[in-house]
Image (cartoon, rainbow, N blue to C red):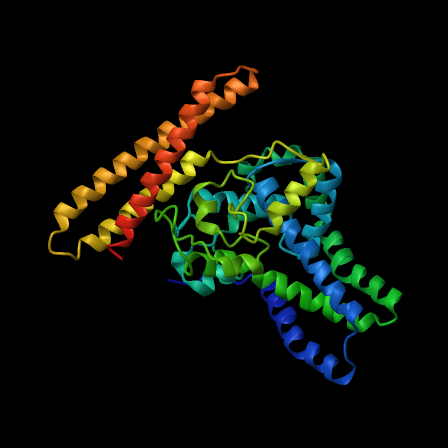
Length: 368
């Protein structure tokens, strides 16, 4: 089958920026050196551009997991141009198609089933789905956002201003335009590009699947470090409307922390969170499935699977009972009603649930 034609603008962009970074950064470092202010600017602009993609393009505009003040959206639009990953309108359109048709080789723009190279960067180098560049029916809601449409209309000017004009200006202030342009401009751009692309490639082949195995997405704490918290990708693909990716307190998710900070400053509202019982139910179902696969290898598999299923049903019942009672208690407190019996019931159900979880973990781990 004949391959689609190359998109030469993209080919040259990625080839020249990557090649330039590999050659020019070491040359400048060896012949001239870089100052600490240039490295600091590299880090700050990397976070500014990366968080504009994760907090703006991804969690705000693609999935609408929260609402943001106009000033926040304006800076996201500038940071998105700095990241040079197309306009927010186009990026969000691609991403919504990806979630709707994940792993479908014909419809998913960057299907992981097409191989690492394709999902990482290859999908942008050829006109595999040329209609993507003019069909924005799935982002009609974003077309009502004046900032999104302003950025889309003036994207070329903005990317030149942010990727060339800004580093040159900062270099002029520091007295070394070339070093700032190479480090905070070129190297920063290449690093942010490929760290972002890892979500489409590595995060679909490397890591665990604690919530679902219905798609290739994986949770990977190391990738979260490289991608501003986006590495908890298995969670994201089943709970895409949650403003968090890392849901545990120890999960590295600076995008979540940024959104929380904006919320505290009254610049972000309506933060969407998945119900905890749904999250735990998904985990429980995956634990059952994995335990059943391990049990299949044992001689008394059917008997053990029956016991597993019974424990699973008991734990699932206790889980739902606890969260239903907890919801009733929260509703009662909201209405300023005092119900000591309900408080006691919730406490007892919590202890029962914790004990049942302990028994469940002991059983499932015994088959490991």
